[in-house]
Image 1 (cartoon, rainbow, N blue to C red):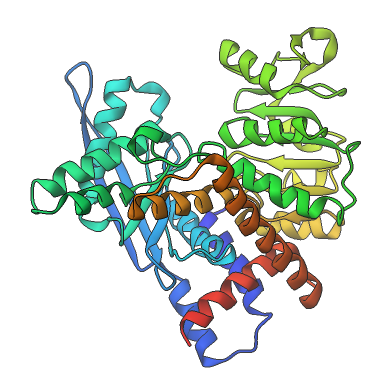
Image 2: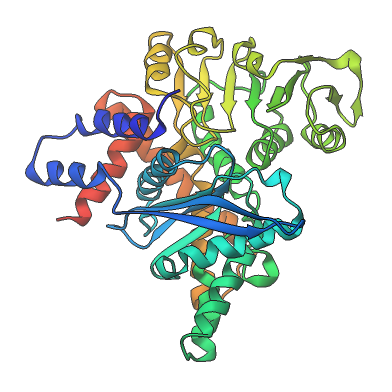
Length: 428
């Protein structure tokens, strides 16, 4: 299995070759080769049956040259330190690329949340928050949602942080209110932002729209989405609502292929009823076996489609399946879905890859907007949020395109080069 952190550093190395080897560059690369701080905690949880379980948890604060640490929390059984380090590194580059004043961090707990009751999940979240509380704060490190975490979990985290801090430190009402900025992705009634739930997909849509004409993407283009969770569903919905044809989606249990195009809403409803998209042959509001067929999850990579959208976990596209990919465009919605070996294979096949640190930056961008609203006692409408998001994402897409043309390189290397240059500027 590819080490995601080693993959991340290889991506940085390619971008660094596009700059002259100044002392400042070498110093910055040395700083970016390792995180500033790695936090490893053991999270004790009393289970519903009275037993005690200990779950390993992590928070990696990678680099804060451009502002406070920022990055999500994921709950997944495969969470380990190398994964969290890679994700934290990508956050550094992503935040620099979309030009928001954050550094990068990431966190996680090695747990399968689907096996926990609601009470166990809340106790896990609050215990993890207490464990990392000394190292987070509205101006220090701001966690947000990621895989298997949501607005409820982010609200629990903020509540627990505030509860513990208020018991230790006297503060004014205004100071207490600003403490809600310790997390983003919260529920609306606890300081969350309008548009945050679908922000990753909304931002991806703005990038997709900016690149569509340049990459000869038309309404006749066929699209497959690997991973039909929050981001995958909302992006499929954006594509469908704008007249594009999504012909296949997958989850961890299976996939469905509907050549004439599927309906994301009906497919999601069917998935919630069945527990998987396999068997959800949904065209329009009707799900009927005549419309399509189930396929194994892995087969989605080799379907005869124009665009493939990996929207699950890292290392989904690797040296063993890259050669089978028929799509001419890969639009990365997940973090780190393509390994460096796969990148090389895809480049030789003439496949264009639009990289994750650009395409999925909508989530952290709207998290930044939430943070700003919390700190200043504001609440923007969804229309205002999306207007600001559109501007950020279109600017980032334009600079990646222009840099790719200027340096005669891939979009990934161009995106990393832009991010690296902005980090270098801070050090001047």
